[in-house]
Amino acid sequence: MSKLRETFLEELADLYDAEKQLVKALPRMAKAAKHEELKDAFLTHLGETEEHVNRLEQVFRAFGAKPKGKKCKAMQGLIEEGEDIIKEEMGDAALICAAQKVEHYEIASYGSLHSWATLLEQNEAADLLQETLEEEKATDEKLTQTAENAINLEEQNEEGEEEETASNRGRSR
Image 1 (cartoon, rainbow, N blue to C red):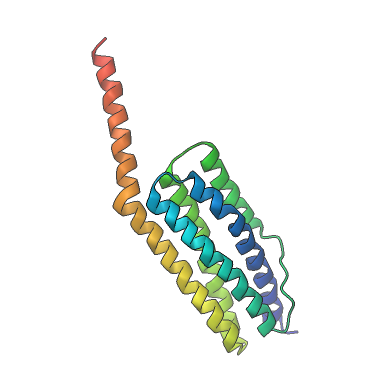
Image 2: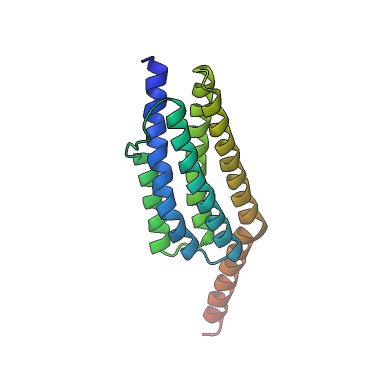
């Protein structure tokens, strides 16, 4: 087996596990989100992520390999960070940051796998990986828009109101 093919299959197994971990984490993130648009984004991405798992299984088959996962420590760490944000009730802006870290990891992984599948002349696999890569980029963009158009501003305003209330309490003494 070529070194690139071997590397491809190792990274594919890693990404397969990453996506499966994410299927379990997204419902918790959706539940923790306060903003309805963010809840919807997480739930929509959950459906996409389930499809990503299916596509990765198709990619394994295109390579003549059985679908199998290899513990993805990177995704495990990113999800743990997200769990801390939920536990500490840091808010929707922090949840978006955690989600975008996940998306950027996935974009890097899918980009590399797509490139390697192309080099290995596995066109079916390359097409499947490209399709998922585009969805990951779209999710990242949606998260950015949600943050910039609503959540960041709302949380900034809430913070300003809290500071003003505290300042007024200090003056009334």
